[in-house]
Image (tube, rainbow, N blue to C red; front, top):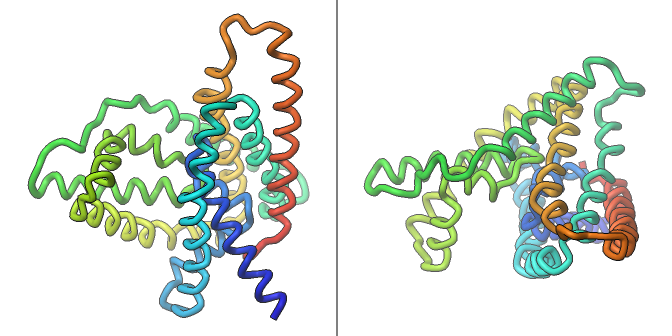
Length: 285
């Protein structure tokens, strides 16, 4: 009974962390799920949904409840902290991302690094960093009307699903690239049920389409897949540096700024590393 309660609380806690961290640039929901050791279970529950419908529904509900609470509560606190104290808070999440890498390496099922490991790692790194540099504003599929507009909404939902499921890919950045970020926020504030409904349904369709091949790849090629995922995860830190850490450094920063800021950021980095390293031990896979 106690073990079951502890397991349920841990699943919801991880869902809470996933939800609350999604507002942080560079920390995607997929990345956090990977670092918390819950990614495999999530993918398996969705791709094999009909095999154990009751068990999968219960598991996904626990994660979703935690995520919704996280998005609705702590996400606003994190956003405020990122705006007020971007330098030390960004280093906390930087530590959190790096803190999960040792657990990920264990999943490659290799005791030592190989040349092939480096190739897959670099490939994952390049993919995520490249996505982060896709210029915003080149596409705008939010304009238009009629059937074409709703078809583009379906495409957008599938892209959102891809960003949600794959670790290291920022959902907000992909929406900005597609020119859908402002339109989606407007639809939410205006309670545009049709718009939100089509986008939500297409996202769900995309998730179900994507999870099956991801699960197959992870089971068939665990070494290559996890080496690439480590590249995805570490590549996601480039967005933290580019969008938060570097802009937070004053133009005329001197020792009076660097010494206290560097010391505090070192502490937050260690705290973030230890927090994820500790949580990663409680795997629900």
